[in-house]
Amino acid sequence: MTAASDPGRGAQGEAPEGASTDLASIFLQLQKKARSGTLRLIGPDGQLKYVYFQKGVVELVKTSKTKTLLGRALLKRRMLTEPQLQAALERQAAGRHQLRLGQILVGMGIVPEAELMNALRFQIAEEVLELFTWSSVRSDFIRGDPPLDIFEPEDMQSKVALKPE
Image 1 (cartoon, rainbow, N blue to C red):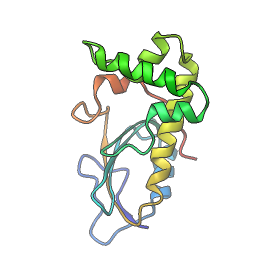
Image 2 (image 1 turned 135 degrees about the vertical axis):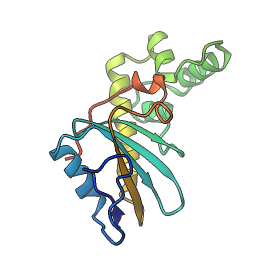
Image 3 (image 1 turned 90 degrees about the horizontal axis):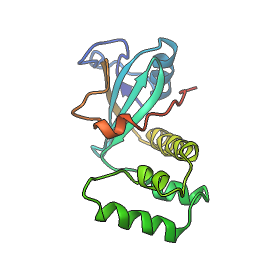
Image 4 (image 1 turned 60 degrees about the vertical axis):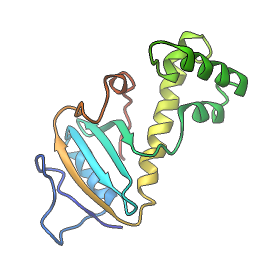
């Protein structure tokens, strides 16, 4: 697996043609150099993932195809039952304001906020680990705060801290 990138570069971030390094090295470099910004990754099938680092720590992941849905992650961790999940999904669908599933589950008293954060960490870890199954990756790094055209304000409320090491 190869990934063309230079995590220290600015908005374009692409390494010179032919330059490559493995994805694990990119993640570790970003952590070691305590970089803040968004790593854009494009897989072989065109799948797109954005990984936001705050001072070298993964805080957010946005993907065009989610590997693990939050409700399923909570079910796997036995934090809720299938009927509780269905009730929360029905409440979400009926609501005038589009609340996130996690907000609804915490509001209903089904899942404690600390457990919700653990499930979000699990979800993000699954998304990041899936990157290492890609046969090839193209990447670039955009320094700065999470881009608001990628990460929505609701995403910012679900930040986690996941060290690449």
